[in-house]
Image (tube, rainbow, N blue to C red):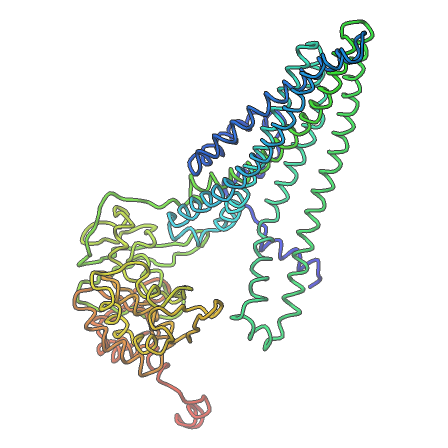
Length: 636
């Protein structure tokens, strides 16, 4: 396979469009008129969030901009009086004395505007971090408010990445908004002065700003489209960078001599992103040049008009001098308004991604029922079907299953048989594609999910190792009335008490070697902590998915010896490949390709022909093939 073929394959893996996504097509038709229509909405939305996090600073910013505009206008009007006094006939001392009030106004206006600029910078720096924090918190709340199925959906991660980009750049819109307001206020002040001097200057001035406005909007569109196109590549670059530098991958990278391969992949991806970025920059520069050329020609027309008005006596020399200063001010302000409006518009496109994610949660908003359940005494699945989004076949197909309080039911089967999927449906983490899962007769689709999860205790295969203290890793922020006693009881049941007692500061030890004084646990020690958090949680439904995969025989025996006691007031679902361990279960349910193929006690299934007995025999068979053939005799 050639390098081109590899790149093409990578494009197919990373670049994809998801059904219903309209950003790409919509962005192609962004125009100056569209920007002008969207700008008030973007400013209003940003100000509303800024108002929520820091009202005094917002009031201060708006007041500063208004006062700055008034000072700019007074300064320009004072310029006319100053010039008129200086060029009039008469004694120079008299003329200077006549001009000093105007000069004082000019100096005061300059001083006020300089002070206000410092104040605006200070207030903007106060608000921007708070605004970004609010955007990020709202985004995280939306993410935790999505169905678990969202993470299995193609395109969800891309929607999240674009929304996260919107949250990150949200602070920029505060500074961009202030720059826009400053330029706009300066523009209004200059326009008022020009309008007083001669109204004909205003429409020509607006005409001069049009070419640059079109160029700036085009550049914003090109930049945004480049970002959308490369979002998958950028995420892959981040993942590769994390793996290349992370300690958990370090041994595999070295032992597998993977560094050259990974670095080459990283290099090719970054080159592709850089090429797209360069293309967008080149296109933006081309449009900026054309906009500047058009703006320059239009400005020449405006200056020609000014000279014509002066030559025909429609403007005095003093007024013309003021007009020259006003034109310079207004020209710079027009450029500032257009430039900052385009920047706000570009930032706003990312913020639209953020806003849309909040509204739709990536298309997977959490379905909230109106039933507030208690701890279920019976969890039942009937004719249950589940299919992952984008898959062509069912992960579960026609499942009937029941688990009751005081009962341990084991789910066994080969990889991909649907055991973990079924456990997530029972806990309401997934909702059925068809069929039902009920808690004491209430379908999980009718339950309030947050209320339901209060009665669930789950230890998944890939449990989280939180960079927190041992206490927080067990309680996860949910203390009991007798917190310390309950923590140690749960830790003892999981065998984690031995782990905690060996730590330097006991329950107060930070379990993260990456931080100063943090401790590092082995995989088996972490699994004991994960089990302790499950036993600590007073939940009616306990689901253990491969709970002892990393434990030694002594620790494993301790867990299963305590499991029967834990099941006295809970319904327990045990998912495991270690078939000897399911002897603790009251019933064993065998899954194969998403269907229940056997059900019964351990003793019954271990003697009856079927998949369970076959897997049990294979698990207990530790002879090598040659020895097996020899035991069976020649020819066999």
